[in-house]
Image (cartoon, rainbow, N blue to C red; front, side, top):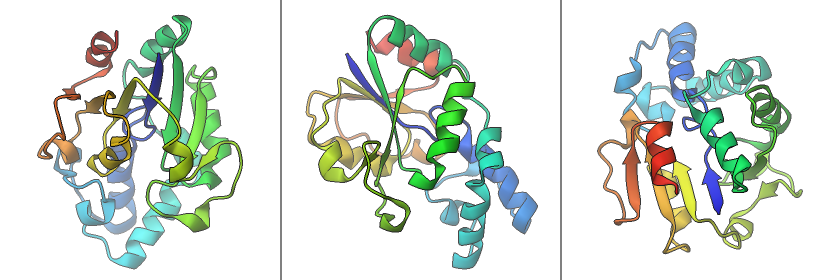
Amino acid sequence: MKIYVDFDDCLCETARAFTGIADRMFGKKVPYEEVRFFNLQDSFNLTDDEYKQIMIEGHLPEVLLSFEETPGVSRVINEWVNRGYEVDIITGRPYSTCEVSRRWLDEHGLSRVELFFLNKYGRDQFYKRNDYNLELEDFYRMKFDYAIEDSPEAFKFFDHLPELKVMIFDRPWNRECELPNSNYFRCPDWDFIREKVK
C-alpha cells in the first residue's frame, strides 16, 4: 500500500495559523471558517505586496515550526507505517522550507515518512533539482493507492491514476467544490480517513 499525504492543512493547521498572521500584519480579521479560497490572497483580500509579505512571514522557520498538528494525524500515519504501508508526504511548499519541514515532521513523531517537494504551482525560482524535489514529470511516474489532500487545485495531479482513492480533508475552501468522480471522498477527520484506508 502506497499513500500520498499533503502537508499543509492535512498534517498541520496552516490556514488557521495564517488567519492570525493576516490579522497581526494587516488587521485582516477573517475567521477560519470564512477562509473560502485556497488562494490566501483572495481569502484575506490582500494586495500583491501584502500577499508577498505574508508568504515570507508564514514561511519563516519559527512560524512553520509553530503550526499545530492536525488532531490524530501522527497516530494514524504511524499505524500505517507499522503495517508496512509506504507513506510519502508530498508538499507544494517551496524547497527552501525543506529543513524546517523535515524538522516539524520529526518533532511530531513522523520521522519514518519520506518528504518530497512537488512544484505544484509553478514556483520554479524556489526549487532546485535533487532526490526530494519533484517536477510534475517525476510525480507522474509515481503510483499511489490512496491520497489525502485538501486543495481542489491539486485534483488535476491525480488524473493519471484512475484507480486512486482520494480522501479530501474537509476544509472551508473545498466544501463547495465538485468532486471529480466516485473515487473522491470527503473526510471530516483522521479517524474517518483511517477507516476508509483499509
